[in-house]
Image (tube, rainbow, N blue to C red):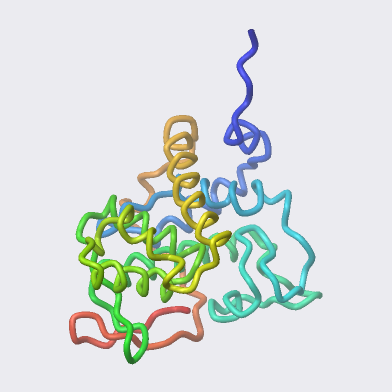
Length: 235
């Protein structure tokens, strides 16, 4: 009996050398302080646009392009998002922005970070456990996840455990449908990432190699406080 292709198998058929190298290069933003690799980017790329085959229309305000950035987020990462020039549809620009966003989220949940006057993230010490919060925030925004952490802690639960925190997503403002989406997103990305790690020829060690880091294209963002120090975060 012929084994049925998985989603990852199908995405491999859509991969090109250019796409793989763009993802590898973007993964240089990751380092030893996170649990993110090129396989993480591959998994998100597959889930978000099926390896560039479901990108929607150029210039729209809603999510579009390789990594499905909404226009405000794209502009915050200094990507042009007009109808005539939409860099969300450029794999090099889009993968760079996605990697920087993931790295920013990892920074936010690695230390107590002030996101607003009355809202701070709770540090998740374990890199592997933190990744669930990073992926959830990539889908739903860091504020909503930090708020769910706070509510979990107020209820006597562990704000560093995703299984505890996810039960407070609705209380943090997510609809029942969105809560289901967030939880499924985290589980799917981790599953896809593991399969990519097993099957992909993309070099997941790139982030550890010495060499010039890609130039950041972030021109705007905001300041947050991490360990009583101001840190500029690309929004």
